[in-house]
Image 1 (spheres, rainbow, N blue to C red):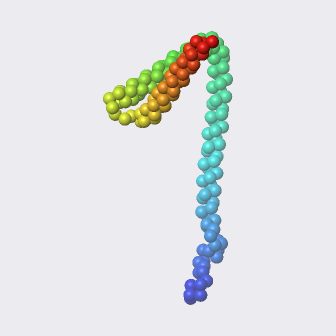
Image 2: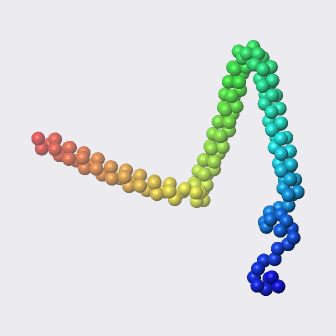
Length: 148
């Protein structure tokens, strides 16, 4: 009958533990799990820090002794790998450009061909205008020298 009048029904569990709260045993299990996981991760981070300090302590004299050999070797390897990487990148760029040019020359419309045509037309127009201006200037210069 409580539903009929719009009042919510409460169970015995909600009266004992509060409405909307989880049972105390469930909260304890969650807390125990969180403490266990957090403690394990904290222990692992401490062990990692200790191992890093020990490895650095052992490796430092070795690095100091071999540094005249190691530093030039690392620089050489870096230059070698970066050279191969740059060479490969330039090769890929060259192949893609040659492929684009081949598609453009054979009449297929590769991406950017319309923009290239528009730029070519603008340059041709400007070159024609400059040629006309140069001819006019030359004519003015020739006629100007004969008049004096």
